[in-house]
Image 1 (tube, rainbow, N blue to C red):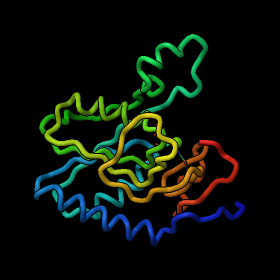
Image 2: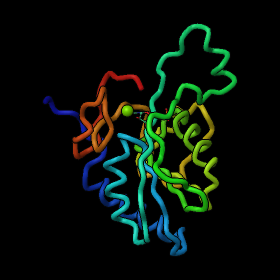
Image 3: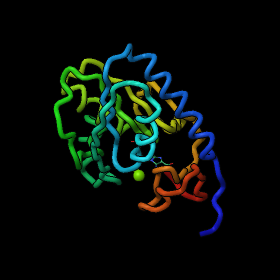
Length: 184
Ligand code: IMP
Ligand code: MG
């Protein structure tokens, strides 16, 4: 494999996750939390984050897929519901009613995925709802939504590694690297 340029090292990731874990615990007032990881990109981040939080914590996974390019004739539907590009492929296995939910994302980009999932999970009537994302690319946002906990804010570059993929590849790279020439 040719060498990809490292944007964030494994040591930087590990140190930041310790800080994020402390912030989450401090904000949780000793109450139990349930982390909901978005497959597959957030799986590695979630596995490190849950071990950095000194709280009674459990976790679930949820799966989404995007429809990709909009087919001719569907533009009107999307204008009405701009998260219509996203669909659920795996639901959580339990009700989140009355729970302290923390949605865990690998990267917040256009905001379509997070907006869709926030709406879905708020429908469970959790006691509280927060979002933790490892990466944030604010320059690409299409919908106004922010995370409560952000690991790193990054420029508009396509990144892979530490769970993030390009066509399912590179998820197992320990560092976050820039993949040149790819448009998000
Ligand atoms: P959003 O719905 O546009 O906010 O996109 C979120 C999803 O897009 C993430 O969960 C990733 O799967 C994917 N994504 C966005 N930017 C990148 C990137 O730079 N590298 C890899 N995946 C990305
Ligand atoms: Mg992906």
